[in-house]
Image (cartoon, rainbow, N blue to C red):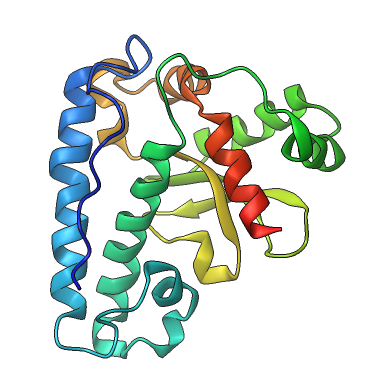
Length: 203
């Protein structure tokens, strides 16, 4: 069965003033849709059809070499954005609680240090890419990983928990070249319940 573009859980304007409605429309309806279409085209009539995106990205070396680049880019783009939309919600932000908060404190000392480190990693991506909070399945520990372009942390055996997209299409209409301002505003959209659920599932 082909991969499908997921519907957003909220209207395009629901994350304003932090992320504007036009950016959401272009980002979801056009960019994410293109990754979805191109992923389906790349795996059509191959052994990858019917596999989960997690399986595909976690075993990229098993993807035929002639389609591996397209699957890495479009598969990562598809999966990264599926997580990105769920990681956000209207009136989000604040700080996590429970086991996720404990893991963040263990890894970074406190939430403020974690926020600083993830922001720094995301803003520092050269060109296009993502900043991620990740975990290794079963470890119960978290760390930060910057990834280039659309390459998924899954390709390195990591489970993505929370991601900030720092491709220019994610912020340029509102923030132009001010990536730090966008990343700073993005913290006000985070759906910590979603991030915590991903962490619990990976434990």
